[in-house]
Amino acid sequence: MTSVSSFLTSALCPLPFALALVSATGTGAQVQPPAPRPDTSVAAVVEAAAAYVKEYQDQLTYVIADESYVQRILNQAPLDTSMPRSRTLKSEMFFMFGPADRVWMAIRDVIQVDGKPVDQRPDLRAALQLLPAPQVAGKFKTYNSRFNLGRVVRNFNEPTLSLLVLDPRYRDSVKFERRRVDRTGGATLVTLAFSQIKPPWLIHDLSLNPVFSTGELVIEAGTGRVRQAILKAKIGAVQMELTTVYAPEGKLGLWVPSSFREHYEEGIAMGNTRTQLLTASGQYEEVTCEAKYSNFRRFETTAKIK
Image (cartoon, rainbow, N blue to C red; front, side, top):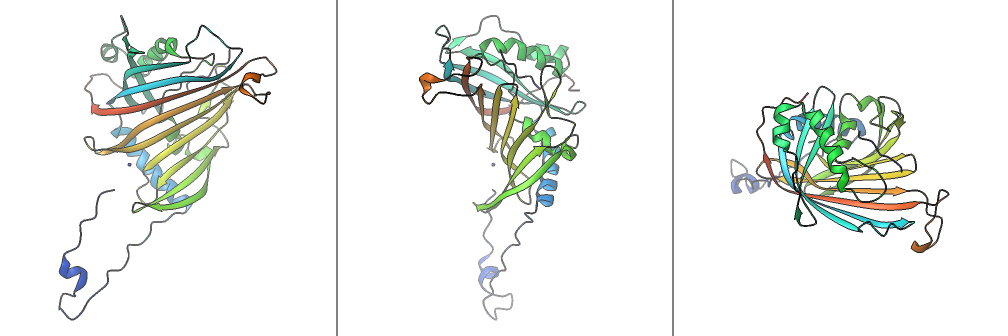
């Protein structure tokens, strides 16, 4: 068994008609100059995004959302006939950032599994009153692992994990490259590829060995707002890809994770068809998970995040 350790545009108000078409003296029409385009250089975009993430770490702390989480086993060899091919969890997801350790925490409180309520589930809110948030996060990851489908053991459930490449602790260890620039909906979006080139490493395996990670960030030039993030890594025989899409949330006045997709593939497919999936070890598995979030709100707790 292979183990993976833990590790959204305000509408522009139209200018007054007289200002837009006629000069103040009424001598003639004037055309307003176009707004200057934001700097799309790598340095400028990274700087803006780092400032955005610094604020975001406070904004997305003590926030809770309803989560629908669907897991699917796409391929598996040898086939475990006793294991369901899909599973749906209904949960509450608590988002927090620990400034001391520079870590994101997304703590899942599972309420239903395939439509059936979870009996005797631990009280997450009570636990947050008594224990430090990182300890609660670890405890609930262990508890929730029993709901995972597939042989790949995983506890990646931090949709905001990839934002750490813009955190002061990790930023100097990451190389950024501009992939493309797109202009849509009045915004200039810059896609940056990133790769870690030196410690401190974002991810470690269970033996605390560093794991090389790469990915992409789609960032609004000027504001630094992150629209989408992709994080990729290979841990042992498992290749993983985590994709987070952000969308505006009116009640909180910020962009929040709207969906989080996970893709895990263990082993290398040697056959040409799905019925011929084999590896050198005789084991292959492909698992996908997708979380969708709604009903964002803030929660109150006396717990201290360290």
